[in-house]
Image (cartoon, one colour):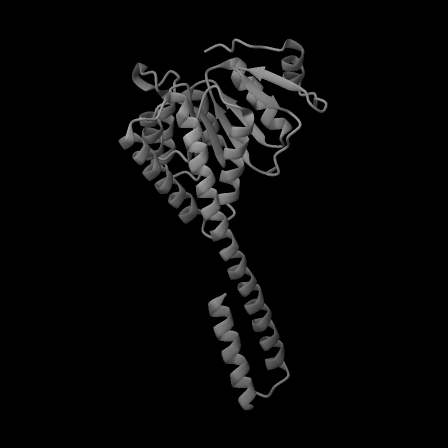
Length: 268
């Protein structure tokens, strides 16, 4: 769908790569793009797949300005080629675009391809079909998250940052998998209730995501304790090794130092 709302000078500035001043805004598809906000996750590489050239160019420019490395693809063939040549942490994928065998859900085809190859790329699905059924379908196929068009850019940034933070956990595969399972279950509850309006879905999902984030904040605090313990044990093992150098192997303390080293390294 072609964007209906433009502020020409601001769109031109965003597409040209110029940095806007405080309060500048570019509006595409009713997206309120707050250009003053900057992502703290600067190292993520993103593949943006959308057949809407204007929206794709705008998002590429905005995300580049946020510090991400972004490649754009207008169709599946281009996306397949880029994926064969590069590794991406995140894929922003339009659900409704020309697909394989003439279908109109190319985003689903590409999502299946990503998951079939067991790639580490995590997918955030974008769609103009804001229904619980669509969200559940995308999540069951392995999407990390889901956002409906048109969307405020702050919501997309929040989802990207959430994904980036979850990748930093000690066991990111478990964390991401847990998030997907939990979100799918919550969507299932909404689907069962079948009383959620189209636009009410977005608000409900944001509220659910806030609750999920609180749970993961608890996990993150627990991991800080584990990491502190790991650092302390590494230090103990190092000191025990230094102590062994100063001791005779026949000394009883030498055996004790060796046991401390062994147990500390095993716990680390």
